[in-house]
Amino acid sequence: MHSVFSMDSDQLWQKVLINLKEKIGAQAFKTWFAPTKGLSLKGSVLTVGVPNIFFIDWLEDHYHTLMRDTLRMVFGKRMQLKFRSLNSKQQSMVGPAHVQIPIRLYYTDAAQLQKRYTFDTFVVGDSNRFAHAAALAVAKEPGRRYNPLYIYGSVGLGKTHLLQAIGTFVKEHVDSLKVYYVSCEKFLNEMIDAIQQAKTIQFKKKYRGKDLLLIDDTQFLAKKVSLQEEIFHTFNSLYDAGKQVVFASDRPPNEIPTLEERLVSRFQCGLVCDILPPSFETRVAILKKKTEISSAIIPDEVLFYIAERIKGNIRELEGALVKIFALSALTKMEITLDSIKEHLKDIFEEKEKRKITVDDIQEIVVDYYGISTGAIKGKRRLASIALPRQVAIYFSRELTRLSLKEIGKLFGGRDHSTIIHDYEKIKKKIEDDFAFSKEIVHIKEKIKSG
Image (tube, rainbow, N blue to C red):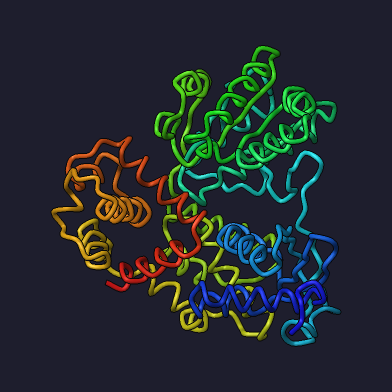
């Protein structure tokens, strides 16, 4: 039996794929992972080839944590995973040899900005016009308008795109300004490393010396006292010096669990704006923009068909488009309305299933854990009841569009802070406990199948 240390890049990736296949559905694996190939292994960096740049977006957005954890499990240590779209010479590895796909690297510059995220590639509609205008105003006059700027909205609506677009615009127009983009999680990891290596002074200088600091996934501050403390002082240092700070989150400041009042106050002292799900017209425009970027030709009727059926998430729109690109590139399939109806059938059937309600979720969860519906709505805090209740609350927020207040009402009149607490507790347990994450996947399948 070969040790992973003696495997080449593709052997290692194939081993990873075997493990991934057990954790996701067969259709998802066939669409997103089967066309991939390990390209190189240098130190702790594994580079994987994919059919095109849109695969990279989808894999990073939807499977980042799962791939990272699976790679660590297979290799026995933390690995860095990078993706690259394949050129014609590499096509013998994946799919028909005649497919011509130009090579494009997925990379970031020193400021951690990705060139594809610009204001030019951001599609503006009624749902995001205010956030876009605010972001552009900040980019044109950093430190003078709307400081801080705080943008929030659900997953996949363009928050990261706007943050990165601000950074790219500023760098292009005022190259002397020091710009940096970072997620809250990465900020925390760097802070921990700095403490362990006795380099806290260098860490503070790095972030407090920026002219424009863009901080993503601000909801990650929940329940992290030391991180909140450092963000607070970093913000104050930059703000007092007239420097610009921009935050993005999946929720407004006052809905982040255990966020200190002084931070809530700082976030709200500038401009807070939200991004809503796009209208039909905006969804079509997004699909056309993505098609234009890929230099593909897709009939309008196909784009309209996709936009009519995927309404709430831009990444899901892109996912359907990526599947079309992949099928066209790898099988030379002609893109017509009839052909895509068949090949996207699984995606649309999932979207068009009956609407999931909290009652549905509670029924499945109590059946799974063997407790009563009365118990899940009650006040008892026994572990045997609290965990199922938290799981049901987690799915109520993930799978319905109800507000925190509405969800709380359906769980015995709990307030919104309790709902947030229970949701975040299950979310963290999923990240930390692999066996529990599989249990959650199983319950989710039961809920979706009714």
